[in-house]
Image 1: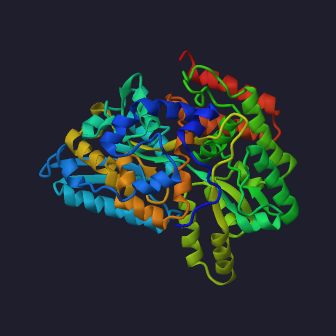
Image 2: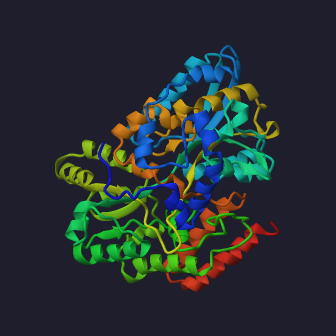
Image 3: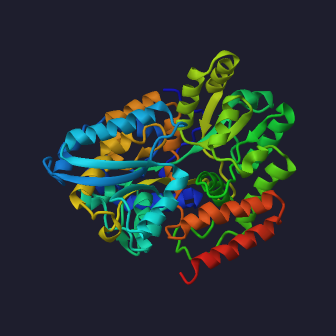
Length: 498
């Protein structure tokens, strides 16, 4: 398997020395690692590319048998299920795995009918808000990690956790379990965990006079690299994303904010209480200024960044017109798939870009290296908001199936990591590591992952307030200080008396 040259060893000593949230995670693992490893065969306090590779293919699991301990095979029922389905932009393997999942579930539970609805990511949240208010919610939904707490706080979710589907809490990352908690109670089960990495085009680096195999080590370096690339090649250096009400924006800007010592609240600190507003501290202002420098001063990022999602970065990158972006390992599969389908000169260009793709760690900042601890969770809606009532056992069967080691691995095939950490030991994880170039880089970013604030207001803060802050500064409608102060006031108003 091809590996990046950018690895730095990730071990507990490094994490502790960093003084970051990742250090706190590592410290927390120390007391429980032995018991957890004994149960799962996975020690999260030892998380290097080499360790990840050593786990893969070391265990076999019987998915059906694990499910039947929770819900018997002959159970008759019906479950309604909403999720963010693969789109036209998704690699073919995602479509294949999506189809295979429902076929496998039907074989395991032939008497349970699944009525599924695949929704667009940007439409799903508003539709769920409407349907829950109208008592027409699905029984089960697989939601991005940021969304569930809003519905839990409103009383729209049923208390539900790993124990309800036969799994122990230590089969999941602590950060993932944190994301399903509200006021000390669990309201979901993690399905997958995602962290991203920095992707760059080595050929553009070379043309710009940069080391093609060495990504920017710090965010300050990234700003300089982007500037140098623009000046020497005329191409955009960094694929900035700043669209309002699109999840791509906070997933790419918050790691920069955290790296400089900022945050929306205190979510990047070792022991956050989500009561302290950090959006207008010195670190947040430094991070926003770095973005302004790239967009306004250097003009080294796409002018369309104000309306771009990550999808709008893909074509320029594949055409060799964009040098760097933050994304999932699925970008490699996407680029490879697109290159295969291209023709003529476009095919030649695309193949050259794919050959020049490199992955490395997201840059660090003065305070830390950070990435969003993302992913999705499976939730069960409360009976009083579900259209037609709730079939608890049918819901349990579906969630048990999707959150076990097999399907939490397969359904995260190109874009994420298994929510159930036993998935790292499966033959499918080994196959993924063998087939998906750079997967080990993004997986190795997990200890640096920081969850968004586990608050019902997080979606508003991350998808609206933070992007609006960026837009105010990037368009020069406000200074950096004015934009961050404005965001702080809005966050305070949104939080109210919390």
